[in-house]
Length: 226
Length: 400
Image 1 (tube, rainbow over the protein chains, first blue to last red):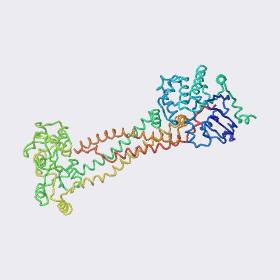
Image 2 (tube, rainbow over the protein chains, first blue to last red):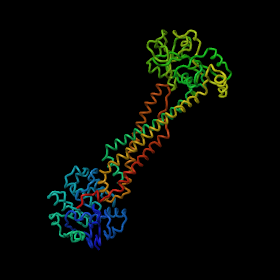
Image 3 (tube, chains in turn red, green):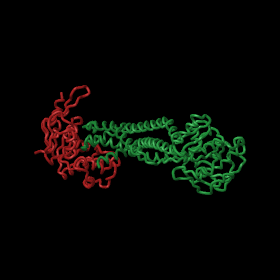
Image 4 (cartoon, rainbow over the protein chains, first blue to last red):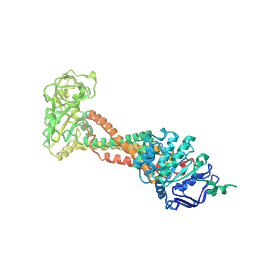
């Protein structure tokens, strides 16, 4: 059985002119346990909405998302929060670190709502991403590349089954992007997590063995094209 | 642990507004507790002060003026009464003890009161307690000697053996110095009564001071009376106040003071109302401070929600944060309260000689902190509701 299974997933928003606009229409999609897949998609193609739907941050208009054995789309908001906290790690393009908290506290909070904060594990993850000497630094005291590494440590600290990465190298220079990507892939592999990464950067996509066009998966893009 | 961390970090991130709002809470809480305790303790203490007497007999005037003048050594004397009046009441079968006093002079603003030695060595100013001396002895009734109340001695800087010239009148005027020289022969131990701020001299000394009208040399200003029974007081009240029109019999002293507090009760109410309003405004400050910071908090809230934090947890975190500001404020409030009541108690002591127990336990010390913290938590509900409603996806921009 696949780790992530999606069928007939649809999401639309009301645009400023009042018309309802389909953003996501994915008839079928799946990801196996341990699989690493990159989705190629341009800006505004609905990639973030797609990831938000998988993570249960947004609710679908219709369709089904299953993570592991649990159907995300059938859960209450509270249960979705719990499932996300326990099973999903999310790496954002802008890192979304909590600026008022130390690196260690950011990672601890990534675990707190799931299996529970584990100081040793959080420290281990930060050491793994090369920030063992920066545990008590605040995000703004770190370079952009280091901030991304904290985000990686936070996403993987609670042993997620699935890691979602939304343009994770979009804010990094070429060297840092390469390093960061390697780190994400390695840590996912070490932790046995599946990785679903979305990007429009050819260099990032070129690093993956499996790459799919988001336009092929998301029919809403074809429907929107006149 | 997570909730505590979120609250702690949020307070730290908004240190300035936290400090300002907590200070406002502290001032409000301190003011509220001070007003309440001073009111409560002043009323309790003053209505118990009678310096060991049940009634005061004096010239026709209001009972309150008589009591303030003869017991608290405040206000002007309403006039004199003849020696015969004193002799008459002293021998009245209902009267256990009658001590005359004469006023009219001062020593650099401290009132000089002429009386008999019996006032200082026989009267229990409070049950079981007589005036005691920390130095010297009681004056000789026929000599130009003085015994200083404890507060007066400290403020005047006089000790046994020192000499001074009295000044005419109840208000200090350096040009009104009397020629007589008095010698300090004793200093009283603190009694925390109005007697502490008085310069006590023999009755005859004040009556015969040069410059006073020789025709009034035997008159007294008032007579302090101990009764054999309370019913005797009503009898004398009838005799002097209702059937006579020449003298006033102020009885019972405690009821007259209680009446004064009732008369000025509106003032307490205004002060209390102001304190409540300040409390309300300061709590509203907590609401405004947190509410105004919601725009900058939304991203953090969205991130926490994306990490799996539930809406209720973040709602609770905001309410707790507001309550913690209240707790911090009320801890500081106790310091402010201590400062205010210390000053007020010192002023009351300087003005009346009466020491109020400003740090006595009062239920307000429990319900003011509880009330303020509760009010702050209540004010946290609105920003907490905003946090509850935060749209996660919208605040996790950018979107790709």
